[in-house]
Image (cartoon, rainbow, N blue to C red):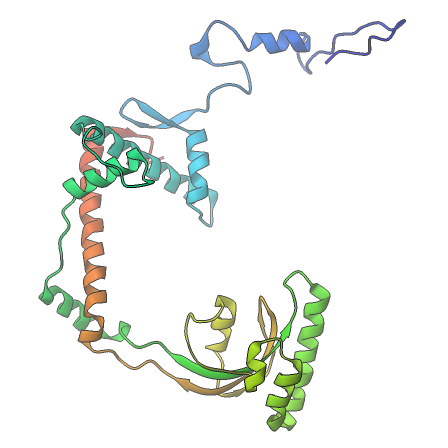
Length: 297
């Protein structure tokens, strides 16, 4: 950028702070003949600290990949992203070594690279189906894990308020507290209050939602209602929709399930576990074939 060129004013070249060169000179300084050294400042290539063989995985690639590996701490996200990129490069090299690219037919909409990796894993990683004995042993050792879902039967009055409407939510909560106080004295008024005040279609049924299993409602509502005891909840239950006055009519604990009901689920789980183990062994073999450096850091 240059100073004004109006008549009578001198044109002064503006220089970069801490540099004796003008802006054009500073800009040209980045375009030197030594391309392998990178530019002097911001244009320099991102550093590489992770390598698969002679292929570097730079910090810019890792930063882009991190969006797919959310974690509580940035360093955990970065480590997961780096591992994923290393795995991808290991598989890409093996596809290239085996010459699979020319023989692979990608499915509709499937990228060629992903198709090659799919075919490679189908060919190299054994897919074993667990035996009947394997499934029965797992069932016997983990019986407590196989129960029908807990259920709850309830009625509610929804006092609607948008998540961003702080005033509306405050009023809804206050109204809910007032209704709870009235219903403690006159519980027979629940259906009447639901019909007149609830924003849920269930108002026409007195607020009845019937029997619900875990996971059938929004997560925040689900977590709270399954902590309640039978009877009128002593506080309004908050959800993304607003506040709910809730009355629990019945609770039913999940009954133990027999082997026949869960056999297929156990088989799928054990098959996945075995495949994951086989995949880990295969990747370890590839890591020995193509030296990986920097991942431990």
